[in-house]
Image 1 (cartoon, rainbow, N blue to C red):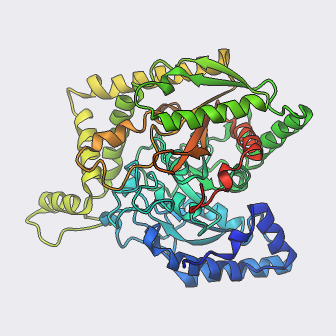
Image 2: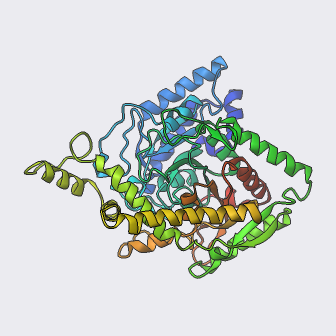
Amino acid sequence: MAKLPLHTQFSSIQALRDALHGGSLSATELARSALDAIESHADLNAFLHVDPELTLAQARNVDAALKAGNAGPLAGIPIAHKDVFVTQGWRTTAGSRMLENYTSPFDATVVSRLADAGAVSLGKLNCDEFAMGSGSETSYFGPVRNPWDLSAVPGGSSGGSAAAVAAGLIMAATGTDTGGSIRQPAALCGISGIKPTYGTVSRLGMVAYGSSLDQAGPIARHARDLLDILEPMTGFDPLDSTSLEHCDGASNAPGRIRARFEAAQAKQQQNGSRPLEGLRIGVPREFFGTGLSPEVAQAVERALSTFEELGAVRVEISLPRTELSIPAYYVIAPAEASTNLSRYDGVRFGHRAESYTDLEDMTSRSRFEGFGEEVRRRVLVGTYVLCHGYYDAYYLQAQRVRRMITDDFQQAFSQHCDVIMGPVTPTVAKSIGDNREDPIADWLSDIYTLGVSLAGLPAMSVPCGFGTERPLPIGLQIIGNYFTEGELLAVADCYQQATDWHQRTPGQQ
């Protein structure tokens, strides 16, 4: 029987933190038990690189800090990083043969900030190659498996992060969300994940896919844990040109999100038995049309009814350009990928072909050998739409549509609602290999998440039920206006106090 680590005995990061600070448990004990559990869950293929010496060295440093009384807020908490964040010591592959043996000389800002907070890293997590995919099937190192059903995908591209958290191997993980890649795997694995407002978390040291879309965020079991991990991740980074120094008129400091979370909670407490009294929930009619499976629709409807019981008001809204988010995204993101991945030419770093005739042949062969099929497909699409004669017709037009999608969200928030809710994915997790002959089917499954990413809005997924035909998890998407991560987490926490979907673990339903 597969081992479960010691931290699974604790219901939250806060409970585990209390035990560590109280001395009843050490960071080294936690780390050893997690390393054992990772080894016994190798069938998930969630981890790409584990180095016990590095992990235990971090844990011993945390134990010394705890003993000295100067430990950080996440001292000893076991986490792991999606393998698109560069790290010293651990390899950074981005799930690709191109970077199979790459080790970075520095840590990504997200990695260093969580380490400074005392979190102990268990290693690097599997993902879709260069974060391109919706099922974590495109990794050069093989697909990640969903702990609820090993024949199913965990969602992508942060599938390793979601699978490891859902299986109880770690308390939390970092992920990245370009078009839904935190929210989708969180939904399909029955846990919680949040994509913050674009620019609130540094992108420095994140292997780039789509630079105007990529955003880091945490994945954990429930909203309070997300808050604990997101807070130290957040903050202005002068070395990242896309990092925001000010948010909504205030400094982009880590304490901003917690302050807004606590303010929202204080308001909920004042409302008594109807804590969400006055909250207006926008429900887009476009999210409940053709393509949404009945079992997902029913689970989301039950969740919305729970919110109404908690005092919220349901308001029907329209996001009329929802369907256009798919073509807009799959022009913009591949165009940016084409530019970002041009650096992998076999000259300075990354895979280099063994045999070639000249420089051009070396570059061509190195890229063909180093990139997988999905990456090549998106790079070719991106290169095409950026070519002379097609740039105006495709790329600029997609950017215009992006602006209109953003306007649709802003009209909804300014006139009708405080948050928007709906499904994360049209169906429960599909089986590994289902769309192998039709990759466009995976692109279409992103319909509910792409618009949020194009607009740069914060959004999260929380568990809200299980399928009926296949008892796999279903997620509810909660979308907020810019810089409202604290309020979103407070709303999600209120829902999770009234339900127990987030407490279910593989083997339960």
